[in-house]
Length: 252
Image (tube, rainbow, N blue to C red; front, side, top):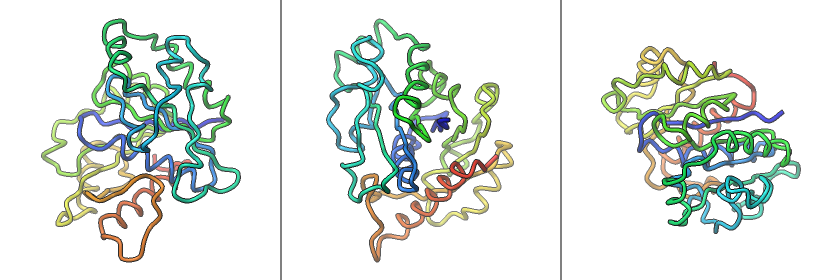
């Protein structure tokens, strides 16, 4: 059975695409078959994170131009280091073409077909995990992605003033089996443990990790190097913690 992991930020600018991409690679490195879907149909960016040209895509599936398998791109061979033999990484991109985005804006799309296609992808591609990059806020695509989640990662800015007033009530009503908070962009002078305690109390949810502000993160799949910046090493450690909680079924 495919475990759906949705990465969602109630507010924009918190790094959901970056986290989703790196998390998918980390899970694949752990020996899993992982899918990664760009649910930001109106502003897609996952293809750029992996520097991948878009051929087949979710738009083709939504407009009945292909099956869900035809929308998937095998990323395993494109990573800097090979994955374990049984693992795999597949991207389900959304089209960045202006005409495709304009069609979505004017005609909308069948949310039921998107949800059904993502579920089908888990079966067709024999995925252990499917990571969904959800758009910010509570629009149609965001709610579809959140409703599919077995594990919902809520990404918030680490600075308290940037997350004041964040209400997770709507997400809680979707009743995901697991829901965890991740704090991102933590400044190096802030106390990560205190930030986590504050956010856990405010959100009434466990904080899976506090990720540092990291301006030189590099592409997903880049291997750690000796002498790398502390922020990059800390991001990697936090990422491994999140992936471990997901793989083990923990985290709340």
